[in-house]
Image: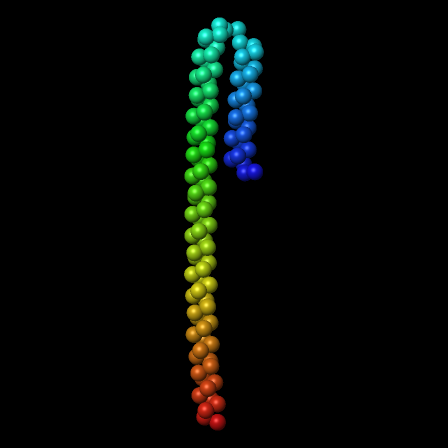
Length: 102
């Protein structure tokens, strides 16, 4: 489980526990308490959505970075292969000339 997922689960659990404790120990009228709980729930939901969006952006950044690195490695490997192929072809032609001259 990623750190971001752990953070999100922790926040959700803390919000639930906090709401339950608030309901049990609240010295307020029911209507006032419900308004306060609703306001806090909306705030927590907004914060949770913000964390989820941030996590999505970080994941997208990691994927983009991995794709770029893979593309770079592929291009380097291709260039190395082409260099080796050219060198090998040149060596074979040189050997063929030497053998034909004998």
